[in-house]
Image (cartoon, rainbow, N blue to C red; front, side, top):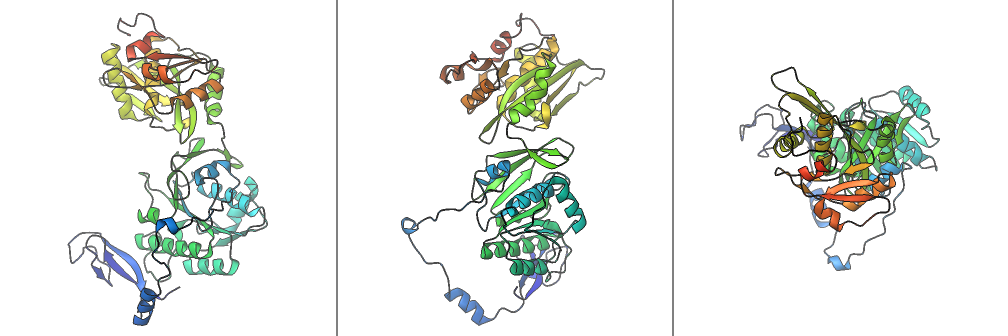
Length: 465
């Protein structure tokens, strides 16, 4: 590692100073002086050699031949789905999420699966002792002969261990605990996190080792540390579920070697994270045993390229307060408020004296307009105390004018519903004319919200109160 010293640079105007201060003397901005590591005394010869000895040559894109990517599966199908089929040598991935969500458990399972064929995997932990990690590994069955462990927070010692062991892959748990030996700031600060991440990326790219860097997120869901971390790494994966929920959904927000519209779904168990290859069956298992219930509707959302059947539950009860309550779980509350206004306007529902609660069963969180029709009819079903057919799936975006619009990938959603045993589907009128007919699934079209409600409720011209 080169000899470095720390300086403080303003993130607004670029002013640098060897001393830290709260206000920049140049632009007078507050809290913009961030610690950085720079070379202590770079020689002119070294700079001249760097400028003259460029390794890259100018070439046309047509003359550049792409090499075949070698991908190594992690042993976890849901994680491989996010990675695009497996890990590329030298790939650096950031796995972020709130504390206790399952980041360490997932990476320990992946590390053990990668080490099973004899690959050297180095697991570095700056938060837990060797006994704690060993006990978890034995509990979830993740112990492997070539899985090495190092409890260290000093970056120089970690890089030295990588140089001596030459591992195939490395897991760093977590980036907020590492400390750069040439920086005086505390671990987790902006300068420490950035410089440590840059050194890890250089080491991984230079040796070809795959690296997984774990990071915590703050209460508002953002990564604890600078956003520049997302620009340094090749892939960024986020857990978007709460720790008390049963499911863990891992989403890709950046991926240089794979898709960014996929999601991996896991279930937290006593033996670690269990993959959920068929989320539709997972979400619909309990609802089929309950039988027809007022306020229940089924729709289909897209998790990446995979359709997932979800159950929308609504509860409408008289309120005892001057202002009725509106609560939504798993779905955007503002969108629910718009849909309730559309119900009052176009179906004449009287909701001004009733509390309305809307929830997605199973703890899933989605923002998909395809669930609009299911939310509206679930609310109407709860208000009318009339259950919807248990074999019906509802797909459609509801507009402010009461129209039902088509949604993307309607055929894939209907195909998933037919595979799950549903025999009836309600979509927009235009989508009903274009979609292919599936065996055993009757598709009905509805141009507006009133027409869709008329398929399930009688006397819809009268106020639904």
